[in-house]
Amino acid sequence: IYGTRNNRAYLKSKDIRFSGKPPGRPPKENDANKSELKEKREKARQGEIDRIPIEGKFGQGKRKYGLDLIKAKLSSTSETWIAMIFLVLNLEKWLSKVGTSLLEFFCLFLSPRTLLWSIWTHTGGRLKSMFIAFAMKSYGYGPYFIG
Image 1 (cartoon, rainbow, N blue to C red):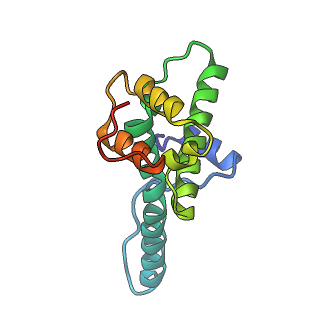
Image 2: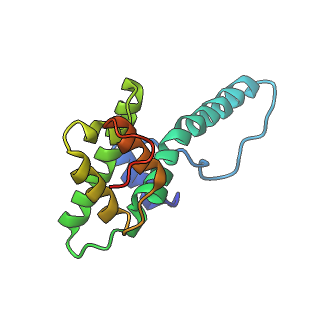
């Protein structure tokens, strides 16, 4: 979002803090305002640091889950797609903290054949060897399982 006066006023009306540069000329640094300017710079830097993981999740959603490929006609459908993608992102993060993967989570509810078929259809017919190896391992099949 650009830091125009209208955009700044809109963000202020919604109680959203704008982290861009303030309008106008930057103040000159002297002994009277040196600590104040240093505090403002540190606060701005901390804001940048706090945004890094959030922007990283948006990038992960675009790269891994197709967040940038949504082409729904209705806005409600687009919002539903976006909500589902972030639900999967949050579920994956939660499961990683628990110590299990998303695939292991779905293995609890699906039979081996259903799991392999869903992987096959969602990868466009290109089965990933790690998914097959994991499915074979988790269901007790030997290393040379051919389904």
